[in-house]
Length: 271
Length: 283
Image 1 (cartoon, rainbow over the protein chains, first blue to last red):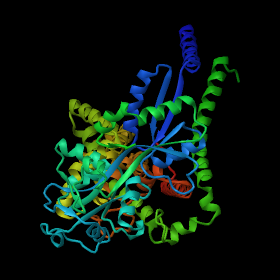
Image 2: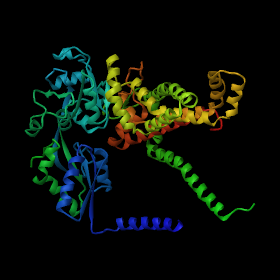
Image 3: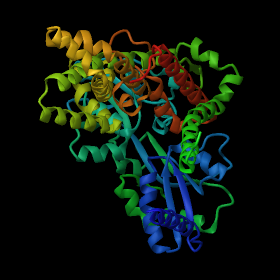
Image 4: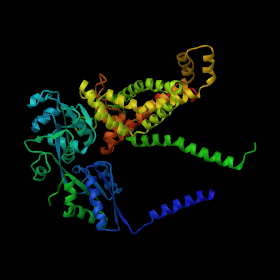
C-alpha cells in the first residue's frame, strides 16, 4: 500500500519533469481578445502542422489583457479587437482582419435601417418608440455593452458620443448575451459583431441585422469599405520578438489562412 | 501523556493543512487590498459612496459610485433568500416526516443535482425562459425579480440539504416525548423539531445567503446590469459581482484597481452579514 503510494508520487514527478524539459519544442504564447482568439487558434493549428517543433498556445482574456501581456512580456503576442490607444504605441500592430459592428433588432421588428443620427437619438433616449421610426408602436429597449468593451468603444467612436451620454435599459456582456436579449424582446435594439450576428441568424435565432446609413450589414459591404462601423482585429508584438513569432505573424497575414478568416465571417485585411 | 508516533505525525499534518486553509482567506483579502491600494491611497474610495453613478469609462465626467450596486447585491440576495428559504425548509420537513423512502432518496439526488448545475447554465436558462416571461408583464424583463428567482433556485438545495441535516441531527427523544404527550404531528414538527434544529437551519440559510451575494455568472445574464437604485422588482439592477465580471477583462490600470476595491468592499459586506448571525454552535 505504502509502496504503491510512493510509486504514484514518483511517477507524477517524473512526468512533471519530463513535460517541462522537452527543449526541442519552441512555444509561442498568445493572449487577448475573445473576438480574435478563434481565428488565431485555427490558424495556429495549421501553422503547427506546417512547422513541427513550434507550439502555439492561445489564451483569451480581453483586448486590454492582450495588450498588457504583450507589453510586459507575459505573452509573445497580444490579440486586440480595437486600435492601439495613446501610451500603447511602443507595440507594433499587425492587422489580420476587419470586423463590422452591426445593429440588431428582433425579427418581428419591421424597421429596415437606421441613420447615424437616429441611432444617436435612440441611445440618448430622445427617440423612445419604434413608431417614431416608422415601425410598429412599442417602447424601444436599448441594450448597451459594459464599459471597456471593444465593441462599445467602436460604437461610441462611430456615434461621436461619450459613454456617459448613453442611457441604456439593459447592459450586456458579450455578443451572445446581446443576441439572446434582442431575440427575447420584440422591441429591443443592440449591436454586435456582424460575424457573430450572421452565424446566429443562419442557425435560426430570431434577430435581424439593420442597415446602417443605408448600407447592408454584411461581410461584403465591410470588405468593400462601405460599411460605416468597423474595427481592426490585431496581433500586437514588441520590437524584440523571437524568430518563430515573426514567422507566425507572416503566416497569419499570408493567403494561407484567408479561408479561416472568412469561415469566421471576418474580412481578411487587404494588403 | 503517551502519544503514538503516528498520532503526532497526523496531528502536525492536520494542523498544517488547517493552517493553509485558514490563511488562504487572509491571502485572498490581502491580494485584493494590494491590487486595490491605489484607490485607497488616492482617496478615490470616498467617490465610491459620494458619486451618484458608475461611469468609469467616460472621458468627460467619470463617476465611481457603487452604492446602487451594493444595494443591488443586498436586494437580490434578500429576494433570493426570501424565495428559497420557505420551500427549502418545507421540502426538508416533507422529506423527513412524510415522504416514503424511495421518494426521499429521489429528492436527495434531485437536490444534489440541482446544486451541481453550473451557474452559467442557470444564467442562460434564466435569460431564455424567465426573462421573456417577466418581459410580458413589464419590460425589460432583465430585472431584480429575474435575478431573485434564478438565485433563489440556485440556493434552494443548500437550504433544503442543510435543513434536512439539522432536523436529522436533533435528539429524537424530544420528538418522541412530544408524541407521548399526545401532540399532533404538525405540533411535534413546528413546536419541537424546528426550534431544536434552529441553529443548524440558520447556519444553512447564512451559507445560502453568502453564496447568493457572491454569485456572478447567473446574475450577470438576467439582472440587466443598470447601475441605478431600483424602484420596483421589475427594474434592472447591477450587483457588485456583475460589474467586476463585465469590466475586469477589459479594464486598464486605474479602472482595474477600482474593480478590485469594489470586490474588497463586497467581501467586507459579506463579513458583516456573517457577524449578524447569532453565535451558536453549528450543528
